[in-house]
Each structure stands twice: as C-alpha cells, then as structure tokens.
Image (cartoon, rainbow, N blue to C red):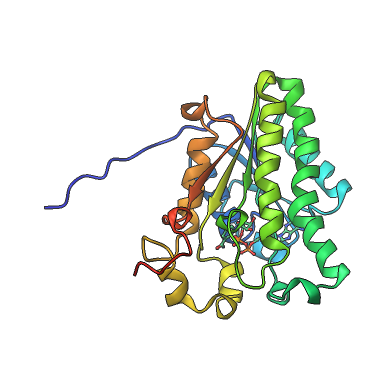
Length: 261
Ligand SMILES: NC(=O)c1ccc[n+]([C@@H]2O[C@H](COP(=O)([O-])OP(=O)(O)OC[C@H]3O[C@@H](n4cnc5c(N)ncnc54)[C@H](O)[C@@H]3O)[C@@H](O)[C@H]2O)c1
C-alpha cells in the first residue's frame, strides 16, 4: 500500500513577485509555481523569444541584470503595473560551456561577465527592490544560489566562488534589513534539469554520473526548487531569514572522502 505523502497549498493572491531569468529553467518554474497560487508575476529576462511561450498571467519585461538601468526598469515595471513588490527572486545567472576552464585560462572579459551577471546583477536587483520594500516595510528577497557555493568542482573557477558570495549576500542583507520587515533567504539547488545543465552535461561527467553524485540518485526538477521558494517566501517561514535552504538531493551532506555508492 502506498502511504500518503501529504500536500501543501499556498495563496499568493494580491502578492507581487519579480523573477529574474524567468523565461527558462528554474526561473520559469518559479514563475509558473507562483502564478498558479494567484500571485501577480513579473518575469525579467534577456531571452524574449522563450518568454513568448510563458503561461498566461505572467508579465514580461526584457532586461539584462548586469545593466543597472534594466534592473531599475524591471522593478519600476512591476511596481507601476501591480502597485508594489512583495518578493524578488534573484535567479538569472550564467555558467556557459566556455567557463569550464581552470583559473589560469580565464580571460578578464569572461570573468567580468560572470561577476557582472551572477554577483553584481543580484546586488543591483536587490538594491532597487529593497528601496521599494523599505517604503512598504515588507518584502522578501530570495537568492537562487547553488550547492557549488559550498564546495569545489573541476574547472569551476568563477561560478563556485561567486555562488559562495551569493550566500554571504543573503546573510549580509538578511541581517541588515531584519528589523525593517524584510527577509532575505536563499535556495541552493543541486543539479536540476534545465537548459543550463543540459548544455554542460559532458563537462559534469554525463547525466548518470551527475545523478549518482546526489544521495537521492537523480537530478532534480525545476518545480522542486520553485516549491522551496513558495515556502521560504510565505508567512509560514516568517522566522526564517539570513539563511540558505539546500534543495539538492542530499549532496550537501556528502563529503569527497570516498564514494559511498
Ligand atoms: N540547473 C542547475 O543544475 C542549477 C544548480 C544550482 C544552481 N542553479 C542556479 O539556478 C539559477 C537558474 O539556473 P537554470 O539552470 O535555470 O539556468 P538556465 O540557463 O537554464 O536559465 C537561466 C535564465 O536566465 C536568463 N538570463 C541569463 N543571463 C541573464 C541576464 N544577464 N539578465 C536576465 N536574464 C538572464 C536566461 O535567458 C535564462 O532564461 C541560476 O542562478 C543557477 O546558477 C542551477
């Protein structure tokens, strides 16, 4: 007999959420998850082609998170359209195939692009969103980080260290704004099946190896990360701030001492 698993439901009617990189992968699942709970969802992305197929009810604003004016514009767009901003999900990040190189081969151009999107992009989006949230005395910033923020991997000279910095952004901002009604949290996914991971499967040893590296023995689904954002950004998580939630099939508990499988 199959035992019941339990279920959870959310009501985000009237809440406004802005998701960066929401046209594909994890960001798209976050947009879909939130719109299905009644939220007003704004997706910001550089990819306006993929955005054309976003489900009904999700508003799109084109923008690059490494450009300050685009960050400001996306926040203003959400506020003007819906009258406020309750949740910012910093999700847009890049890990292109050509970034799988050791440190001594990095060009300054690629380094700066990755810092510009994955680190400064999170900061500038937060800067403009926090101004609105301060005026409301409420809001949640949720950074999508990575299990790679806490461990090394072959030829991940920029992505991993920047993800580690995203974890500290969460702690720093979480503490800084804790008494102003604003929570700052993060989610650190393990490998999740998205266009980003599909493009770099070879660099990561192939799908089977990558799945086996996770104690649960599989690659995760974007909706499993979206589910974590729904809880973390809800009133059920009202005493949770300045911290990270691993959604990673158990990889965080796995040391490199030996392969247990
Ligand atoms: N997929 C994984 O296994 C995995 C694991 C851990 C963490 N993450 C993190 O999850 C987040 C989403 O990853 P994903 O796998 O869905 O990636 P993805 O590449 O599949 O999708 C990223 C989206 O961000 C958009 N984007 C890229 N640069 C942008 C910019 N400068 N401005 C606005 N939009 C931009 C892309 O157009 C795309 O729609 C990232 O922060 C990533 O680091 C992913």
